[in-house]
Length: 191
Image (tube, rainbow, N blue to C red):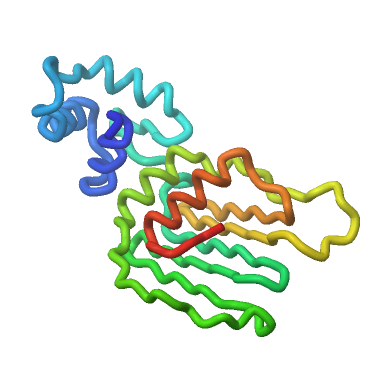
């Protein structure tokens, strides 16, 4: 786990903290993995570099409200094919995944396997690294009428803002990373 991810986890659990308290908490979490302790100057450097994720107010650091996720809904629909939807509630630490097939493609699900779902907190850390809030609202292929391909949408609700992106046959640069994170969380395909 990167140091900024550790800081995010600490702030999620404990709320806004002054730099010395964050430094102490980070060192407790990472003490077995590091030879030298993290210093307050390093915390300041990390928070300054990741200023889009953190807010400093009155000497206390918190997660920026526009980046603090409450929920996420992601859909991926194949024209005449399998469609997927995942809903993640970060507040309740839960998710639901749906998979459905077009009537013409009604092959039964075979090889049913018990799925061990992933970790919502780990998924949230991956979202922070993907910067979904920087995705464009719309991604479109230059093709005219679309009769095959994939339509997708992602809605991320944070404490301070709602981010929505969607597209057809065109995706953000880190779309595959996002799909892999969803698959890891749900244990079901999302592609």
